[in-house]
Image (tube, rainbow, N blue to C red):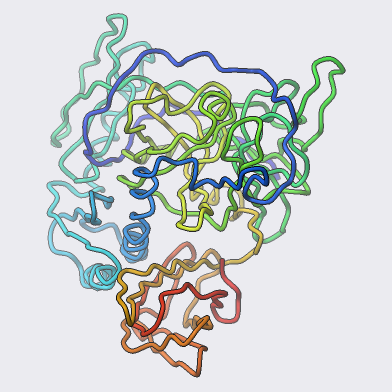
Length: 512
């Protein structure tokens, strides 16, 4: 069934104060030149030079991104507990430097306090008092939003909830002398900040299976494919991209030849969400990789799952036009705000002051990077303005389209993050986070086989058994449940070399 919704103005956003945004001039014109050769279906790295995604990201940026893995794991454990209960005093959660910060108004309830204690075994978690709860901020923002949305020509264009719970920001773009509206009083601290309005950003030739990052269009290319996905229930395949790229029911092509007016048909747009700016294009062959290099090469990265996004998290985007302009991905995109209104958009900033996206990048993949060069789907590109960047997160797309998931090589309902947090000559420490993409689990067991003589010597938050190289970890009473889209974590100390084992099996199901 195809569902469409009328787009509504974006108004309310939640975020964390993480520095002043650098504003630059207009976006450069996109390059529409076709590559000299079509994309192929090679393995993850280009055969000619062995490059992978990790080679394309500046070393300092890459290291900062990879260092956030335990922070994201810890934040997800806390978020799971918060989502399971009433909002209460919750204000926000984000990644700040080398730790996770949870802002909370009042006394931390016991269930969330337990989750924080658990998460601290994975990464530092700080709990900071908030002036307002998220519920109080949303109530106040509901009074401001109609005034901000009333006149699209005035300076105000967004209402943002601060993740630290200190108040509300109204974003204004005072270009061409636009007037600023008179805002009503709400009883909540409110201030205005200058922020350039973002505009919608609208690879070239591929063959099945269709991977993310390719240039797609009705005729000539206009947008970028985000990720190959499948519906978890029906196993039907799609490409996920941006809704504003084209209307429902239209044919989408790749490799359009302007001389013959022909191209390779991918499929038809069959579902969209106007509010969230997402769209599904049908295809029987969704790919499990994304293109991350230039327009003329085949450097790709394997997609192993998807991730929630948090303020402070660093991401990359691989739009088709940007690939032609800079020969690789745009990285060092720091998540600043997560909209909490009808659009649910996420806003980020390119920290080097560079263009975050270009015309033709719309719908392209936004992702986090794993230490082995694979990626996790984080969302799809929607808007940009200089270093300012707006994207729709993958979690929202999952909610919209019947629980879709990336078309990974291994179609699994679980994912395991295995992070070596410390090592020495004779042993190592590990934090393990289990993510559940399937139905809620009540009672779990995770198993794996060590590749060598590693021996578990100490552990926490799980019941361990080891026979030879085979390890099985069961839940304790307090962490027996893993809700859909939730996460649990445990850890251990072991002797031997810190080699990552595989595969992991959750209740008999092999995980990514």
